[in-house]
Image (tube, rainbow, N blue to C red; front, side, top):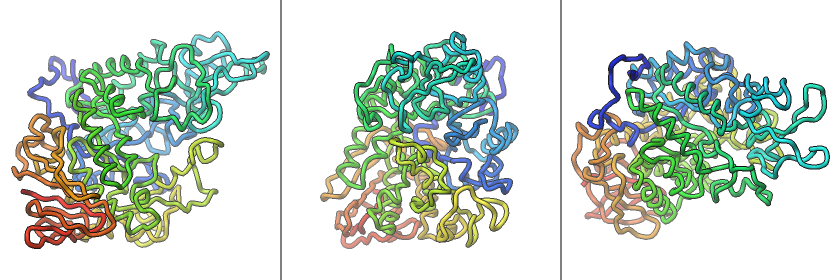
Length: 582
Protein backbone atom coordinates (compact mmCIF):
# COMPACT_ATOMS: atom_id res chain seq x y z
CA UNK A 1 0.00 0.00 0.00
CA UNK A 2 1.28 3.49 -0.84
CA UNK A 3 -0.03 6.92 0.03
CA UNK A 4 -0.90 10.03 -1.93
CA UNK A 5 0.66 13.44 -1.06
CA UNK A 6 -2.09 14.15 1.47
CA UNK A 7 -1.28 10.98 3.34
CA UNK A 8 -4.36 9.03 2.29
CA UNK A 9 -3.59 5.33 1.85
CA UNK A 10 -4.25 4.09 -1.66
CA UNK A 11 -4.68 0.35 -1.81
CA UNK A 12 -3.24 -1.25 -4.88
CA UNK A 13 -1.28 1.81 -6.06
CA UNK A 14 2.38 1.44 -6.81
CA UNK A 15 5.37 3.56 -5.91
CA UNK A 16 6.23 5.97 -8.73
CA UNK A 17 8.42 4.66 -11.52
CA UNK A 18 11.59 6.44 -12.60
CA UNK A 19 9.66 8.06 -15.44
CA UNK A 20 7.04 9.39 -13.02
CA UNK A 21 9.47 10.91 -10.57
CA UNK A 22 10.05 14.65 -10.91
CA UNK A 23 12.94 15.00 -8.50
CA UNK A 24 11.23 18.17 -7.27
CA UNK A 25 13.76 18.69 -4.48
CA UNK A 26 16.75 18.72 -6.82
CA UNK A 27 16.37 22.41 -7.72
CA UNK A 28 13.73 23.49 -5.22
CA UNK A 29 13.79 26.78 -3.30
CA UNK A 30 12.90 25.87 0.29
CA UNK A 31 11.89 28.49 2.86
CA UNK A 32 12.68 27.93 6.54
CA UNK A 33 9.99 29.01 8.98
CA UNK A 34 11.03 29.35 12.62
CA UNK A 35 7.46 29.14 13.96
CA UNK A 36 7.82 31.15 17.15
CA UNK A 37 9.16 34.13 15.16
CA UNK A 38 7.17 33.97 11.92
CA UNK A 39 3.58 34.99 12.68
CA UNK A 40 1.45 35.08 15.84
CA UNK A 41 -2.12 33.97 15.19
CA UNK A 42 -3.60 34.36 18.68
CA UNK A 43 -1.91 37.51 19.99
CA UNK A 44 0.08 35.98 22.85
CA UNK A 45 3.40 37.23 21.48
CA UNK A 46 4.55 33.79 20.33
CA UNK A 47 4.42 32.68 16.72
CA UNK A 48 2.23 29.64 16.09
CA UNK A 49 0.88 27.30 13.46
CA UNK A 50 -2.24 29.36 12.86
CA UNK A 51 0.03 32.31 12.13
CA UNK A 52 1.96 30.17 9.66
CA UNK A 53 -1.26 29.09 7.99
CA UNK A 54 -2.46 32.66 7.47
CA UNK A 55 0.85 33.63 5.85
CA UNK A 56 1.07 30.72 3.42
CA UNK A 57 -0.23 32.88 0.54
CA UNK A 58 2.74 35.20 1.09
CA UNK A 59 5.14 32.26 0.72
CA UNK A 60 3.35 31.04 -2.39
CA UNK A 61 3.62 34.55 -3.82
CA UNK A 62 7.33 34.64 -3.00
CA UNK A 63 7.63 31.69 -5.36
CA UNK A 64 9.23 29.07 -3.10
CA UNK A 65 8.57 25.38 -3.67
CA UNK A 66 8.51 24.10 -0.09
CA UNK A 67 8.40 25.26 3.52
CA UNK A 68 10.54 23.76 6.27
CA UNK A 69 9.03 24.16 9.74
CA UNK A 70 11.37 24.16 12.73
CA UNK A 71 10.13 22.07 15.71
CA UNK A 72 6.59 22.54 17.01
CA UNK A 73 6.33 19.32 19.06
CA UNK A 74 5.25 19.07 22.69
CA UNK A 75 8.29 20.26 24.61
CA UNK A 76 9.35 21.95 27.87
CA UNK A 77 11.27 24.36 25.56
CA UNK A 78 14.62 23.94 27.27
CA UNK A 79 16.16 24.32 23.80
CA UNK A 80 13.44 26.10 21.83
CA UNK A 81 11.63 22.87 20.99
CA UNK A 82 14.65 20.76 20.13
CA UNK A 83 13.94 18.93 23.38
CA UNK A 84 10.94 16.83 22.37
CA UNK A 85 8.68 15.27 24.98
CA UNK A 86 6.15 13.81 22.52
CA UNK A 87 6.91 13.41 18.81
CA UNK A 88 3.24 12.91 17.91
CA UNK A 89 1.82 15.96 19.68
CA UNK A 90 1.95 19.73 19.13
CA UNK A 91 3.10 22.01 21.92
CA UNK A 92 0.13 24.13 23.08
CA UNK A 93 2.11 27.32 22.45
CA UNK A 94 1.99 26.47 18.73
CA UNK A 95 -1.53 25.03 18.54
CA UNK A 96 -2.93 21.56 17.99
CA UNK A 97 -2.50 18.61 15.69
CA UNK A 98 -5.52 19.89 13.78
CA UNK A 99 -3.63 23.17 13.22
CA UNK A 100 -0.68 21.22 11.83
CA UNK A 101 -2.98 19.29 9.50
CA UNK A 102 -4.54 22.57 8.34
CA UNK A 103 -1.11 24.01 7.53
CA UNK A 104 -0.23 20.94 5.46
CA UNK A 105 -3.60 20.86 3.71
CA UNK A 106 -3.65 24.57 2.82
CA UNK A 107 0.01 24.53 1.78
CA UNK A 108 -0.71 21.72 -0.66
CA UNK A 109 -3.67 23.66 -2.04
CA UNK A 110 -1.28 26.54 -2.77
CA UNK A 111 1.28 24.26 -4.45
CA UNK A 112 3.65 24.29 -1.48
CA UNK A 113 5.22 21.25 0.12
CA UNK A 114 5.81 20.96 3.87
CA UNK A 115 9.00 19.62 5.46
CA UNK A 116 9.02 19.14 9.24
CA UNK A 117 11.93 19.06 11.64
CA UNK A 118 12.75 15.70 13.24
CA UNK A 119 15.02 15.45 16.29
CA UNK A 120 16.29 11.85 16.56
CA UNK A 121 19.60 12.28 18.38
CA UNK A 122 18.01 13.21 21.69
CA UNK A 123 14.68 13.88 23.35
CA UNK A 124 13.49 15.84 26.37
CA UNK A 125 14.14 14.66 29.91
CA UNK A 126 10.34 14.79 30.17
CA UNK A 127 9.90 12.10 27.50
CA UNK A 128 7.94 9.19 28.97
CA UNK A 129 10.76 6.72 28.32
CA UNK A 130 13.34 8.80 30.15
CA UNK A 131 11.07 9.67 33.07
CA UNK A 132 10.27 5.99 33.58
CA UNK A 133 13.94 5.04 33.27
CA UNK A 134 14.77 7.46 36.08
CA UNK A 135 11.90 6.40 38.31
CA UNK A 136 12.69 2.69 37.94
CA UNK A 137 16.36 3.20 38.77
CA UNK A 138 19.44 1.18 37.76
CA UNK A 139 18.60 -2.02 35.92
CA UNK A 140 15.48 -0.61 34.28
CA UNK A 141 15.22 -1.97 30.71
CA UNK A 142 14.29 1.56 29.56
CA UNK A 143 17.76 2.78 30.52
CA UNK A 144 19.14 0.70 27.65
CA UNK A 145 17.36 3.10 25.25
CA UNK A 146 19.66 5.90 26.44
CA UNK A 147 23.32 6.01 27.45
CA UNK A 148 23.35 5.38 31.20
CA UNK A 149 26.76 4.53 32.66
CA UNK A 150 28.34 4.23 36.11
CA UNK A 151 30.76 7.02 36.91
CA UNK A 152 34.49 6.81 37.39
CA UNK A 153 36.30 7.37 40.67
CA UNK A 154 36.02 5.66 44.01
CA UNK A 155 32.37 6.54 44.43
CA UNK A 156 31.42 7.03 40.79
CA UNK A 157 31.69 10.77 41.28
CA UNK A 158 33.39 11.43 37.92
CA UNK A 159 31.74 11.34 34.47
CA UNK A 160 32.10 8.08 32.50
CA UNK A 161 34.32 9.78 29.89
CA UNK A 162 35.69 13.20 28.95
CA UNK A 163 33.12 14.16 26.31
CA UNK A 164 31.92 17.75 26.39
CA UNK A 165 28.47 19.16 25.69
CA UNK A 166 28.02 21.41 22.67
CA UNK A 167 26.43 23.84 25.13
CA UNK A 168 29.46 23.71 27.44
CA UNK A 169 30.56 21.61 30.38
CA UNK A 170 30.54 17.81 30.61
CA UNK A 171 28.27 15.82 28.29
CA UNK A 172 27.16 13.79 31.31
CA UNK A 173 24.79 14.45 34.21
CA UNK A 174 24.56 12.30 37.30
CA UNK A 175 21.18 10.97 38.36
CA UNK A 176 19.74 10.44 41.80
CA UNK A 177 18.45 6.96 42.59
CA UNK A 178 14.85 6.48 43.78
CA UNK A 179 16.19 6.03 47.33
CA UNK A 180 18.00 9.38 47.19
CA UNK A 181 21.54 8.07 46.74
CA UNK A 182 23.80 9.26 43.89
CA UNK A 183 23.18 7.19 40.80
CA UNK A 184 24.39 6.57 37.29
CA UNK A 185 25.26 9.20 34.71
CA UNK A 186 23.48 9.79 31.39
CA UNK A 187 24.86 11.20 28.15
CA UNK A 188 23.62 14.47 26.63
CA UNK A 189 25.67 16.02 23.86
CA UNK A 190 23.57 19.16 24.23
CA UNK A 191 21.69 20.43 27.31
CA UNK A 192 21.19 18.19 30.36
CA UNK A 193 17.48 18.35 29.54
CA UNK A 194 18.25 16.56 26.24
CA UNK A 195 19.34 12.96 26.90
CA UNK A 196 20.80 11.16 23.88
CA UNK A 197 19.04 8.09 22.55
CA UNK A 198 20.99 4.83 22.23
CA UNK A 199 20.50 4.00 18.56
CA UNK A 200 21.96 0.53 19.04
CA UNK A 201 18.68 -0.41 20.73
CA UNK A 202 16.06 -1.86 18.34
CA UNK A 203 13.18 -0.17 20.19
CA UNK A 204 14.62 3.25 19.35
CA UNK A 205 14.91 2.36 15.69
CA UNK A 206 11.37 0.94 15.60
CA UNK A 207 9.95 3.99 17.34
CA UNK A 208 11.40 6.46 14.87
CA UNK A 209 10.24 4.50 11.86
CA UNK A 210 6.78 4.70 13.42
CA UNK A 211 7.17 8.47 13.95
CA UNK A 212 8.15 8.88 10.30
CA UNK A 213 4.99 7.09 9.20
CA UNK A 214 2.82 9.15 11.56
CA UNK A 215 3.85 12.43 9.92
CA UNK A 216 3.95 11.02 6.42
CA UNK A 217 0.39 9.79 6.88
CA UNK A 218 -0.58 13.32 7.93
CA UNK A 219 0.76 14.52 4.58
CA UNK A 220 4.19 15.96 5.27
CA UNK A 221 6.52 15.91 2.28
CA UNK A 222 9.73 15.23 4.13
CA UNK A 223 11.94 15.70 7.16
CA UNK A 224 14.83 17.91 8.06
CA UNK A 225 16.88 15.68 10.38
CA UNK A 226 18.46 17.53 13.29
CA UNK A 227 21.99 16.43 14.28
CA UNK A 228 21.82 13.73 11.62
CA UNK A 229 25.53 13.04 12.20
CA UNK A 230 25.14 12.31 15.91
CA UNK A 231 22.96 9.25 16.31
CA UNK A 232 25.68 6.59 16.54
CA UNK A 233 28.53 6.74 19.06
CA UNK A 234 31.85 4.91 18.86
CA UNK A 235 31.93 1.50 20.54
CA UNK A 236 32.91 1.77 24.19
CA UNK A 237 32.40 5.56 24.28
CA UNK A 238 36.18 6.22 24.29
CA UNK A 239 37.75 9.34 25.79
CA UNK A 240 38.71 12.20 23.48
CA UNK A 241 41.87 12.95 25.44
CA UNK A 242 41.56 16.72 25.08
CA UNK A 243 39.32 19.66 25.93
CA UNK A 244 37.70 22.38 23.82
CA UNK A 245 36.10 19.66 21.73
CA UNK A 246 33.54 22.06 20.23
CA UNK A 247 36.35 23.63 18.20
CA UNK A 248 36.76 20.30 16.39
CA UNK A 249 33.13 20.16 15.27
CA UNK A 250 33.04 19.94 11.49
CA UNK A 251 36.82 19.64 11.22
CA UNK A 252 37.46 15.98 12.05
CA UNK A 253 35.64 12.76 12.79
CA UNK A 254 34.72 12.54 16.48
CA UNK A 255 33.72 9.49 18.56
CA UNK A 256 30.24 10.97 19.05
CA UNK A 257 29.68 12.52 15.60
CA UNK A 258 29.72 11.28 11.99
CA UNK A 259 30.20 7.62 12.86
CA UNK A 260 29.74 5.24 9.94
CA UNK A 261 26.90 3.40 11.69
CA UNK A 262 24.47 6.25 10.98
CA UNK A 263 24.20 5.17 7.36
CA UNK A 264 22.44 1.90 8.16
CA UNK A 265 19.76 3.96 9.95
CA UNK A 266 19.19 6.24 7.00
CA UNK A 267 19.00 3.34 4.57
CA UNK A 268 16.11 1.99 6.65
CA UNK A 269 14.47 5.43 6.67
CA UNK A 270 14.77 5.71 2.89
CA UNK A 271 12.73 2.54 2.54
CA UNK A 272 9.96 4.15 4.59
CA UNK A 273 10.05 7.36 2.54
CA UNK A 274 9.90 5.39 -0.69
CA UNK A 275 6.71 3.65 0.42
CA UNK A 276 4.86 6.95 -0.04
CA UNK A 277 3.80 8.61 -3.28
CA UNK A 278 4.68 12.24 -3.85
CA UNK A 279 8.45 11.82 -3.48
CA UNK A 280 8.91 12.44 0.25
CA UNK A 281 12.45 13.44 1.16
CA UNK A 282 15.00 13.39 3.97
CA UNK A 283 17.36 16.34 4.52
CA UNK A 284 20.38 15.88 6.76
CA UNK A 285 21.75 18.49 9.10
CA UNK A 286 25.17 16.85 9.13
CA UNK A 287 28.25 18.65 10.39
CA UNK A 288 31.11 16.67 8.86
CA UNK A 289 34.82 17.28 8.28
CA UNK A 290 34.42 17.58 4.51
CA UNK A 291 31.95 17.75 1.67
CA UNK A 292 33.01 14.21 0.76
CA UNK A 293 31.89 12.95 4.18
CA UNK A 294 28.59 14.80 3.78
CA UNK A 295 28.05 13.08 0.43
CA UNK A 296 28.00 9.69 2.16
CA UNK A 297 24.62 10.61 3.68
CA UNK A 298 23.25 11.10 0.18
CA UNK A 299 24.02 7.86 -1.56
CA UNK A 300 21.08 6.64 -3.70
CA UNK A 301 19.65 4.45 -0.93
CA UNK A 302 20.00 7.02 1.87
CA UNK A 303 18.83 10.64 2.20
CA UNK A 304 18.06 13.15 -0.55
CA UNK A 305 19.80 16.34 0.57
CA UNK A 306 22.19 17.67 3.20
CA UNK A 307 22.81 21.21 4.32
CA UNK A 308 25.96 22.67 2.82
CA UNK A 309 27.65 24.18 5.86
CA UNK A 310 30.94 24.41 3.99
CA UNK A 311 29.35 26.97 1.66
CA UNK A 312 27.60 28.80 4.49
CA UNK A 313 30.96 29.29 6.19
CA UNK A 314 32.63 30.86 3.14
CA UNK A 315 33.42 34.56 3.39
CA UNK A 316 32.60 37.29 0.89
CA UNK A 317 35.63 36.52 -1.23
CA UNK A 318 35.63 35.35 -4.84
CA UNK A 319 38.36 32.74 -4.44
CA UNK A 320 36.84 31.33 -1.25
CA UNK A 321 33.36 31.17 -2.74
CA UNK A 322 34.58 29.50 -5.92
CA UNK A 323 36.49 26.90 -3.94
CA UNK A 324 33.38 26.14 -1.86
CA UNK A 325 31.21 25.84 -4.98
CA UNK A 326 33.65 23.52 -6.74
CA UNK A 327 34.22 21.33 -3.67
CA UNK A 328 30.47 21.05 -3.06
CA UNK A 329 29.60 20.11 -6.63
CA UNK A 330 32.51 17.70 -6.91
CA UNK A 331 31.51 15.90 -3.70
CA UNK A 332 27.86 15.46 -4.63
CA UNK A 333 28.39 14.38 -8.24
CA UNK A 334 29.59 10.79 -7.51
CA UNK A 335 26.48 10.02 -5.43
CA UNK A 336 24.08 11.73 -7.84
CA UNK A 337 22.73 14.07 -5.16
CA UNK A 338 21.95 17.76 -5.62
CA UNK A 339 24.09 20.29 -3.84
CA UNK A 340 22.30 22.60 -1.43
CA UNK A 341 23.09 26.26 -0.85
CA UNK A 342 22.23 28.21 2.28
CA UNK A 343 23.26 31.63 3.58
CA UNK A 344 21.51 31.84 6.96
CA UNK A 345 19.45 29.79 9.40
CA UNK A 346 18.14 29.90 12.98
CA UNK A 347 21.54 29.01 14.46
CA UNK A 348 23.91 31.48 12.78
CA UNK A 349 24.31 35.24 12.48
CA UNK A 350 22.30 36.54 9.53
CA UNK A 351 24.50 36.90 6.46
CA UNK A 352 23.48 40.53 6.01
CA UNK A 353 25.46 41.20 9.19
CA UNK A 354 28.17 38.57 8.65
CA UNK A 355 29.09 40.19 5.35
CA UNK A 356 28.90 43.76 6.65
CA UNK A 357 32.37 44.15 8.20
CA UNK A 358 30.82 46.79 10.42
CA UNK A 359 28.96 48.67 7.65
CA UNK A 360 25.24 47.73 7.44
CA UNK A 361 24.81 49.23 3.97
CA UNK A 362 27.72 47.18 2.68
CA UNK A 363 26.26 44.09 4.34
CA UNK A 364 22.95 44.57 2.56
CA UNK A 365 24.66 45.11 -0.82
CA UNK A 366 26.62 41.91 -0.39
CA UNK A 367 23.60 39.98 0.83
CA UNK A 368 21.60 41.01 -2.25
CA UNK A 369 24.46 39.92 -4.49
CA UNK A 370 24.86 36.69 -2.54
CA UNK A 371 21.29 35.58 -3.18
CA UNK A 372 21.69 36.03 -6.94
CA UNK A 373 24.84 33.93 -6.76
CA UNK A 374 23.11 31.26 -4.68
CA UNK A 375 20.03 31.05 -6.89
CA UNK A 376 22.19 30.76 -10.01
CA UNK A 377 23.98 27.64 -8.79
CA UNK A 378 22.86 24.08 -9.62
CA UNK A 379 20.99 22.40 -6.79
CA UNK A 380 18.51 23.39 -4.11
CA UNK A 381 18.51 26.74 -2.30
CA UNK A 382 17.33 27.43 1.26
CA UNK A 383 15.98 30.81 2.35
CA UNK A 384 15.75 31.63 6.06
CA UNK A 385 12.72 33.66 7.05
CA UNK A 386 13.35 37.40 6.89
CA UNK A 387 16.41 37.23 4.67
CA UNK A 388 14.16 38.14 1.75
CA UNK A 389 13.52 41.38 3.65
CA UNK A 390 17.22 42.08 4.10
CA UNK A 391 16.92 41.78 7.87
CA UNK A 392 20.16 42.31 9.79
CA UNK A 393 21.12 40.47 12.94
CA UNK A 394 19.79 42.07 16.11
CA UNK A 395 22.99 42.55 18.08
CA UNK A 396 21.82 44.73 20.97
CA UNK A 397 19.31 42.53 22.77
CA UNK A 398 19.61 43.14 26.52
CA UNK A 399 20.65 40.17 28.62
CA UNK A 400 17.34 40.11 30.48
CA UNK A 401 15.35 39.24 27.33
CA UNK A 402 17.70 36.55 26.00
CA UNK A 403 16.22 33.05 25.76
CA UNK A 404 18.86 31.01 23.93
CA UNK A 405 19.85 28.27 26.42
CA UNK A 406 23.47 28.38 25.30
CA UNK A 407 23.61 32.02 26.48
CA UNK A 408 23.27 30.74 30.03
CA UNK A 409 25.95 28.04 29.76
CA UNK A 410 29.62 28.49 30.52
CA UNK A 411 32.36 27.56 28.06
CA UNK A 412 29.89 26.65 25.37
CA UNK A 413 28.47 28.43 22.36
CA UNK A 414 28.44 32.20 22.36
CA UNK A 415 24.72 32.17 23.05
CA UNK A 416 23.84 34.75 20.42
CA UNK A 417 21.25 32.80 18.44
CA UNK A 418 18.44 35.04 19.68
CA UNK A 419 19.68 37.75 17.33
CA UNK A 420 18.54 35.86 14.23
CA UNK A 421 15.30 34.69 15.85
CA UNK A 422 13.67 38.07 16.48
CA UNK A 423 10.11 38.03 15.03
CA UNK A 424 9.98 39.34 11.48
CA UNK A 425 8.09 42.54 10.50
CA UNK A 426 5.00 42.33 8.32
CA UNK A 427 3.36 45.76 8.36
CA UNK A 428 2.88 49.05 10.17
CA UNK A 429 5.27 51.58 11.67
CA UNK A 430 5.53 50.30 15.25
CA UNK A 431 6.36 47.00 16.92
CA UNK A 432 5.26 44.27 16.61
CA UNK A 433 4.91 45.29 12.93
CA UNK A 434 2.00 42.98 12.19
CA UNK A 435 3.63 39.97 13.84
CA UNK A 436 0.43 39.51 15.89
CA UNK A 437 -3.20 40.36 15.23
CA UNK A 438 -3.29 43.53 17.34
CA UNK A 439 -1.26 46.75 16.94
CA UNK A 440 1.07 47.23 19.87
CA UNK A 441 0.72 43.60 20.91
CA UNK A 442 3.46 41.55 22.57
CA UNK A 443 6.47 39.89 20.94
CA UNK A 444 8.52 37.20 22.66
CA UNK A 445 11.72 39.01 21.64
CA UNK A 446 11.75 42.80 21.15
CA UNK A 447 12.01 44.11 17.60
CA UNK A 448 14.21 47.13 16.73
CA UNK A 449 12.56 50.52 16.37
CA UNK A 450 13.92 50.89 12.82
CA UNK A 451 12.34 47.73 11.43
CA UNK A 452 9.34 49.44 9.83
CA UNK A 453 11.39 49.99 6.68
CA UNK A 454 12.05 46.24 6.42
CA UNK A 455 8.41 45.14 6.61
CA UNK A 456 6.69 43.15 3.89
CA UNK A 457 4.19 45.97 3.51
CA UNK A 458 6.88 48.63 3.09
CA UNK A 459 8.83 46.64 0.51
CA UNK A 460 6.00 45.22 -1.58
CA UNK A 461 5.75 47.07 -4.89
CA UNK A 462 9.06 48.90 -4.42
CA UNK A 463 11.20 47.71 -7.36
CA UNK A 464 14.41 48.57 -5.49
CA UNK A 465 13.51 46.54 -2.38
CA UNK A 466 15.18 43.31 -1.32
CA UNK A 467 11.82 41.55 -1.21
CA UNK A 468 11.08 42.37 -4.84
CA UNK A 469 14.60 41.26 -5.79
CA UNK A 470 13.90 37.85 -4.23
CA UNK A 471 10.53 37.60 -5.94
CA UNK A 472 12.02 38.46 -9.31
CA UNK A 473 15.00 36.14 -8.91
CA UNK A 474 12.89 33.15 -7.83
CA UNK A 475 10.45 33.76 -10.69
CA UNK A 476 13.30 33.84 -13.21
CA UNK A 477 14.77 30.68 -11.70
CA UNK A 478 11.48 28.93 -12.45
CA UNK A 479 11.56 30.10 -16.06
CA UNK A 480 15.18 29.48 -17.03
CA UNK A 481 16.11 25.85 -17.72
CA UNK A 482 19.79 26.66 -17.15
CA UNK A 483 19.17 27.53 -13.49
CA UNK A 484 18.95 25.21 -10.53
CA UNK A 485 19.11 21.82 -12.20
CA UNK A 486 22.27 19.99 -13.16
CA UNK A 487 25.53 19.52 -11.30
CA UNK A 488 28.11 21.80 -12.93
CA UNK A 489 29.04 25.37 -13.76
CA UNK A 490 31.33 26.62 -16.51
CA UNK A 491 33.70 29.17 -15.01
CA UNK A 492 34.63 32.09 -17.24
CA UNK A 493 37.81 34.15 -17.20
CA UNK A 494 37.36 37.17 -14.95
CA UNK A 495 39.47 39.75 -13.12
CA UNK A 496 40.57 39.13 -9.55
CA UNK A 497 37.65 39.44 -7.15
CA UNK A 498 35.08 38.61 -9.84
CA UNK A 499 33.12 35.38 -10.20
CA UNK A 500 31.70 34.64 -13.65
CA UNK A 501 30.12 31.41 -14.77
CA UNK A 502 27.85 30.16 -17.51
CA UNK A 503 24.92 27.75 -17.28
CA UNK A 504 23.23 26.23 -20.33
CA UNK A 505 19.99 24.26 -20.63
CA UNK A 506 22.05 21.12 -21.30
CA UNK A 507 23.68 21.52 -17.85
CA UNK A 508 20.37 20.66 -16.24
CA UNK A 509 19.02 18.11 -18.68
CA UNK A 510 19.58 15.14 -16.39
CA UNK A 511 18.27 16.79 -13.26
CA UNK A 512 15.19 18.62 -14.45
CA UNK A 513 12.63 18.96 -11.74
CA UNK A 514 11.75 21.57 -9.18
CA UNK A 515 8.76 23.82 -9.72
CA UNK A 516 7.22 22.21 -12.75
CA UNK A 517 10.52 20.88 -14.12
CA UNK A 518 12.63 22.41 -16.85
CA UNK A 519 10.10 21.55 -19.53
CA UNK A 520 7.78 24.45 -20.12
CA UNK A 521 10.05 27.11 -18.74
CA UNK A 522 10.12 30.29 -20.75
CA UNK A 523 13.67 30.69 -22.00
CA UNK A 524 15.99 28.32 -23.86
CA UNK A 525 19.08 30.55 -23.82
CA UNK A 526 22.33 30.19 -21.96
CA UNK A 527 22.74 32.11 -18.75
CA UNK A 528 25.70 33.93 -17.18
CA UNK A 529 26.12 35.15 -13.62
CA UNK A 530 28.76 37.73 -12.73
CA UNK A 531 29.56 38.69 -9.14
CA UNK A 532 31.82 41.50 -8.00
CA UNK A 533 33.07 40.75 -4.48
CA UNK A 534 35.37 43.79 -4.41
CA UNK A 535 34.65 47.15 -2.87
CA UNK A 536 35.06 49.05 -6.15
CA UNK A 537 33.42 49.05 -9.61
CA UNK A 538 35.01 46.63 -12.07
CA UNK A 539 34.79 46.62 -15.88
CA UNK A 540 34.15 43.24 -17.55
CA UNK A 541 32.97 42.10 -21.00
CA UNK A 542 29.16 42.19 -21.19
CA UNK A 543 28.17 38.56 -21.81
CA UNK A 544 24.71 39.34 -23.16
CA UNK A 545 21.46 41.02 -22.25
CA UNK A 546 21.02 41.95 -18.61
CA UNK A 547 18.20 40.09 -16.86
CA UNK A 548 18.49 41.09 -13.22
CA UNK A 549 20.93 43.05 -11.07
CA UNK A 550 21.34 43.09 -7.31
CA UNK A 551 22.27 46.77 -7.32
CA UNK A 552 19.19 48.52 -8.64
CA UNK A 553 15.58 47.85 -9.50
CA UNK A 554 14.31 44.29 -9.53
CA UNK A 555 12.93 44.49 -13.05
CA UNK A 556 14.04 42.76 -16.21
CA UNK A 557 15.83 44.15 -19.21
CA UNK A 558 19.02 45.98 -20.09
CA UNK A 559 19.87 48.68 -17.60
CA UNK A 560 17.66 47.07 -14.95
CA UNK A 561 20.21 47.54 -12.22
CA UNK A 562 23.22 49.57 -11.29
CA UNK A 563 25.47 47.80 -13.80
CA UNK A 564 26.16 49.99 -16.84
CA UNK A 565 26.72 48.49 -20.30
CA UNK A 566 28.93 50.58 -22.58
CA UNK A 567 30.31 49.44 -25.94
CA UNK A 568 30.18 45.73 -25.18
CA UNK A 569 31.54 46.14 -21.66
CA UNK A 570 29.76 46.25 -18.33
CA UNK A 571 30.75 48.18 -15.25
CA UNK A 572 29.81 46.06 -12.24
CA UNK A 573 29.22 48.13 -9.09
CA UNK A 574 31.02 47.19 -5.89
CA UNK A 575 29.60 44.14 -4.12
CA UNK A 576 27.01 43.35 -6.77
CA UNK A 577 25.77 40.52 -8.98
CA UNK A 578 24.14 40.49 -12.40
CA UNK A 579 22.26 37.80 -14.32
CA UNK A 580 22.60 37.80 -18.12
CA UNK A 581 21.03 35.85 -20.96
CA UNK A 582 23.17 35.11 -24.01
